[in-house]
Image 1 (cartoon, rainbow, N blue to C red):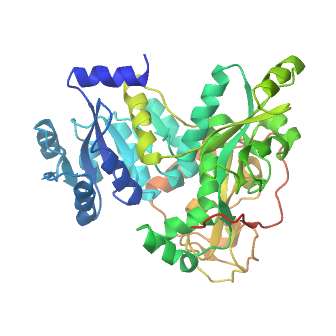
Image 2: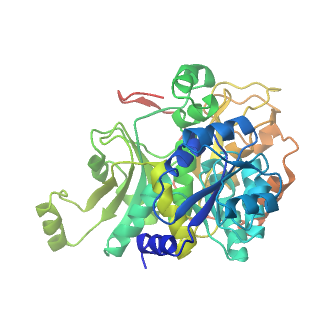
Length: 450
């Protein structure tokens, strides 16, 4: 059965998938807005947000005129069953509510997101992570918790990892050999800060630190880490290759063939038309098949690029929700242990005594690195960097080691999950990998920059 048929059958039975959204920031509001007219078989049941006024805004923008406030799961269930959506400032009301079938976690935070996911698993609920911050740091261990609970954990279609992974899965069904996958980017500038991004954030009604992480390669690295952990592909070097090119098809001749054939790689293009979406690279050594592909305008080979020219998280998430509940199919989830992770790199010369300000800040940017390399260097994950106090100077563009910092007291659950992930996959990804790049990268290919 396909997802469209499954959703229509649920709609016909009066049993739509009842969705609880946790987080009403820019992305959460966009998802709620789309759910005002969702596909048959999906219904927005509840929103949780720490700031009630923001949750109310989300409902109003979605055209919802009436909703119920709930402080307990039983209150929420009563309202939802009666046909009224629910608003709360307590995410556990949604995870514990018997009238909610799936949790969409959109906080973009590691601490709160981890608690929401674990509590949802305890209640037997699948979780869609629209949260690359959490997924790139703790996705593998969270996947084991979801498996133990018998539920689906998945990142979402529409976000680049889901766009690329959906294409990977489709291409593999054609019998083609995928050797690379990744993002189509307009620009990357490691040194963007909240100060440089303030006007853009205000103009687009977004959080300035989020916007900074979009521009400085941190979000790119988190997204490709999610994809790497789902495919088993490595990164070719710290931060990936990221060739600038005119069109995405040019990647067929720009990414390193030896690395693609050895391990598969995740990577990205800069400035390439269509300027958004996801791509895969396939390898076809058969000469007769190359002739056929050339006839259909795919190039001369042996490497070929296929791509999806859009990424629409607020729309494509509907497919992920349907697949997770109706088909118990994850759009994109870790295969096993971590293959890559995102390490903290100094955005400027950092001095002893400074306190790191984390993702999207002034101190550091995040770059994808193979787990074997990152762990052998005891690299500090960008997701665990906030609040760390430097014990020594760290020069610009150097990877920050956990040995360089005094670490703060962290959320106990996050600390526990991180330690468990390290212990479970000690030595993960220790196949031979390329050395880390010692250089930095600043690219602007003439596209509008965030």
